[in-house]
Image 1 (cartoon, rainbow, N blue to C red):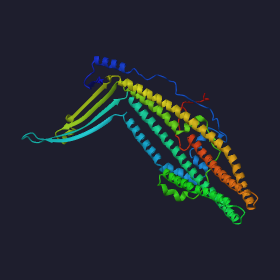
Image 2 (tube, rainbow, N blue to C red):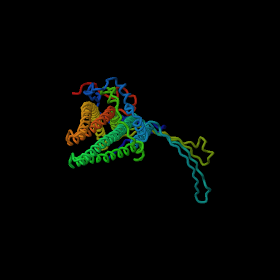
Image 3 (tube, rainbow, N blue to C red):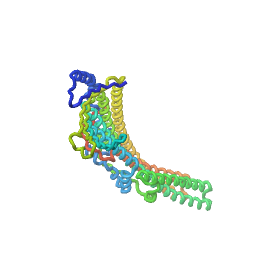
Image 4 (cartoon, helix red, strand yellow):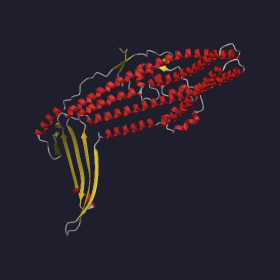
Length: 493
């Protein structure tokens, strides 16, 4: 049940004294706000420094932020830069996020327009007859105006919520851009890694085929048995089996990159089929402090603006319990002939003021306020979760980068030793100084070591991409007030 008190008077009447008392009583009932009056800011404690930052340069947050905007250029690979730039323009997910942003701007303008009076105009012509009387015409023209006074701020709350949603969607667009840039770079690294491992497999295949030829000659000379020859053949076939799998990875990655830049899957096959070197990032990244990193990340920005939007909806729900004041006016012209419309006698005007407020709604408005308060609590929890996740992603990326750097040193030494051992074993086998099993073992070890080295190089490049993504690189954030994030640079306990 929904009851309203509706009090109206025109400009020629004065409101009765009793009516004013009733109005004042209803306003006192409605003005009791249910919103908790707490001025304490929402604070999330973050550490003052990263726990693992070997090889990274520490600097001011502004320097670190500027170095992340176009982080892909730090790989010194023109084709990678081209692919990422094209994805920023033509990627379907990015364009969809841009459409959502345009919608948010339009809805924000709709909310802003509600603060102003609304004016409508109308005009009509009618002609009627009655029995044998002559036909008569009637001309009317008029304008109606209405303005809902925003005394308790409900419309301003709606506008503030729309503006916060607009900012959140702006940050969401940045989040999509960050993700797509990283996805393009990771796919490109996967492509170059597969091409490198394909080259390694072909080189080892050539060496194994030469060893097979030597073994067949020695078998014909009666120096070895068919066992050694078949083992050499098996080794060749095992390496041959790697080639189709790597070609499949190359083709599928080319398709993925084409789709990421908004093109058909096979459109980049010719360009990307040309083998290139693996992109390597510079290690002189300026690592900003955690608080600055969180200000850089678009997903954290979006979660922050969601809190502002939730606060606006809470105030909107509370303000809906207050009285509603409205002013209406109309001005009309009514005449039997078109020329008479301008006569003073044809003018009709009216002004009306009204106030209304809910008297009994079964507790719906109160429940709505509680629901919006719970929604605000959820957004604050999600904000905290987003911050903790962001800190974890950066720490994980730094630890992974450090571990892979250490692994590469050992894998490089292993690959060098394996290549030397394989060369020596082959030379000695040709001279009949070692058993064929040693040759096979050293060749397998060389192939495995070279593949592992290529893989760790790709992992290092991917680690840099993930670190740039975790730091919020890949978008241009707007300049925000230093107090927009309530974060303290204190050690997390």
